[in-house]
Image 1 (cartoon, rainbow, N blue to C red):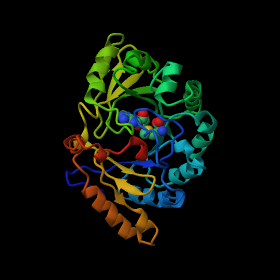
Image 2: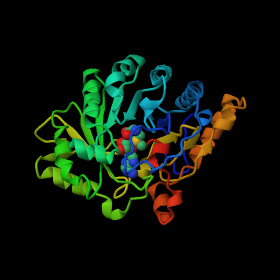
Image 3: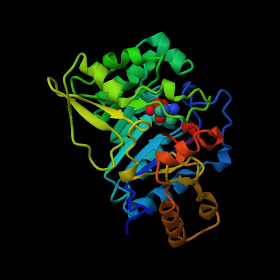
Image 4: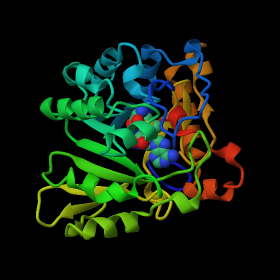
Length: 328
Ligand code: SAM
C-alpha cells in the first residue's frame, strides 16, 4: 500500500540523515557553534534498517543517505550493506562533502551503494576552503575521481550558488559536466542556513544560472520526470547535462515525492516545514510493525504543501531547520 499525503502526492523517495555531525562548516549550512545530538538519540543501524524496510514495503523505491556528513558515521559501509539488501529498493545513493570519499569509495561500492553526489561550490581552492570552513579542495577532487573510477552512477556534483560569493564560477562549474561523466546541479540558496545569512538578495535564480551558462554553451531543456527536484538541460554539443534546483524561485512542491528521516528518528515529510514525527519512542518501546506503519501513514498524510509553508513564516527564522540536521 502506497503512502499518500492529503494533496494526493505519493512518497517514493526517502532521504535518511545518518548523523548530524559534519567535518565541514559550510557558511550557508552549519551554525557557528553546532549542538550535536547525543549519540544515544541517534538511530542504530538496526533501527534505521527497520524503518527503511517498512518504508520500502509501503512504496518507497529510492533511498539517499545524507547528513551532517554521512561518511562521518562510523562503519557507514555496514549500514550501506544492510540497506542495499532491502527487497524492492530501486535506487540507492549518498550525498557527501567528499572529504572521506577517496578512502571509502571502493568499500561503499562493494557494500552496494550505486549513486554519489558530491558537494563542490567552488573550483578555487582558497575560496572553497573559505566557504566550507576549512575544507581541503584537493581531497574533495580526489574523492570525485575515486567515485568516477569506482563506477558510481549517477555521479553528480551539487553547487550552491550565492550572490557575491561564487556566481562568477557558474560557467566553469558547468564545464565539468560537458563530457557527460558527471552531472552538475546548481542549487538556489535556501534559508536553511545555521548562521542566518540568507536573504532573497543572495539568491541567484535558476534562470539567471541557465542564462549565464548559455553565454558559453547551447543548452536544451530536457523533460522533467515527475517528482524530480531539478530541471535538467543537455549540452547541445556534448554528451553531458546540468540541472538547476529552483527551490526558491520555482519550487516543484506539487509533485514532491520525497520524505525524510532525521538522524534521531523523526519523519520529516516536508523540508520546508519544521514538523517532525518522532518514531524513536515507538522503535524503542517494542511497537509492532503495524503500529509503526500506521504512524508513518499519519506523518505522510500531514505533509505540508511545501515551500509556501516556509515563506508564510519567513519572518520567523526559528521555523527554519538548519540543513545539516536533515540532510538537504
Ligand atoms: N555533508 C554532505 C554534503 O556536504 O553534501 C551532505 C549534507 S548537505 C546538508 C546536503 C546538501 O545540502 C549539500 O549539497 C549542501 O550543499 C546543500 N545545502 C546545505 N545548506 C544549503 C542551503 N542553505 N541552501 C541550499 N543548499 C544547501
